[in-house]
Image (cartoon, rainbow, N blue to C red; front, side, top):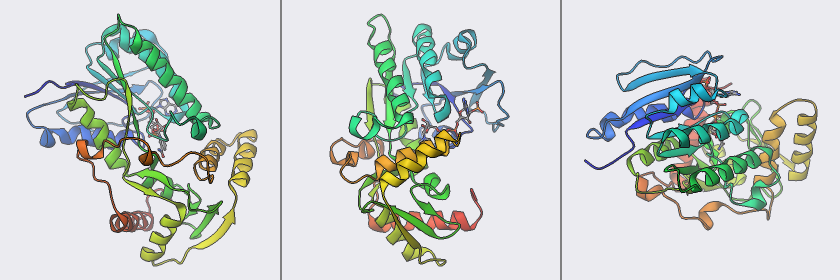
Length: 322
Ligand SMILES: NC(=O)c1ccc[n+]([C@@H]2O[C@H](COP(=O)([O-])OP(=O)(O)OC[C@H]3O[C@@H](n4cnc5c(N)ncnc54)[C@H](OP(=O)(O)O)[C@@H]3O)[C@@H](O)[C@H]2O)c1
């Protein structure tokens, strides 16, 4: 039995991604039977989140995530902290990183889970990614202190495929079976199934000698808006989808106006305006090493993609996230 990060603390366990990570952590009783994990969860005092009861779940720490004393108690004795914290609270991770380093946490998995933060062309103009970068730079600083034994890792996975489609993002609206195609619609981006992202994240607990002080890249598929549309038109009985041609400039402007009016979905427009902009940045699988194979995470081809899209259409029809 090799060394591994045994004592795990998950932040955001009932969130959109966090629930997949918790499921993957609980499944390790079968995937890694000789390496049992002790799983603790951290939740805000104001949270109404309900957690499953399971013998592998140890403590549930409920408190103020801005309170150093609370974080000190929650983080003490943990080998790895997995932060699946809300995109609205990314900067709270700075205090978390400081406290984790102080109490001797070995690895901090920062809440990245999106586009390649190190691709400045792609992420400089996006508020959320600028915050990711600020946290990442802070993690580099904290973990770079030679007196600190902590390491950081960030998982970069592109867009959460099911969630973004079902939530009407990336231009696709199931309600009216209409897609806004931005610019050419042929710009390739990385997308990942949330289950794959969760599995990649959890595998890091069992690989303490790897991925220290770096971003790791995983992607289920590399696709364009037109690839998604083609797959939808193959499997969606309620299609064909209506196409509305737009520019990413138009989308950026809509985002700006929404934010000005206090609608935070404008921040999401900001992301897609950059992601689908022809000639700005490129799909990270073209320039970064993917860890899919070494972590046992599948990388799908065209046929697999159509099947995943079929599943998403099924989820929509079953009423998920309407
Ligand atoms: N690639 C993509 O397409 C994509 C899409 C969305 C998010 N992300 C990334 O994935 C990670 C997790 O995001 P998510 O969407 O899964 O998060 P989420 O569901 O919005 O929130 C996760 C949890 O964070 C906790 N939390 C702490 N402070 C909060 C606050 N101020 N407001 C709301 N919740 C707060 C809550 O847990 P408690 O109630 O237990 O405290 C919440 O359930 C982030 O790094 C985010 O940037 C990526």
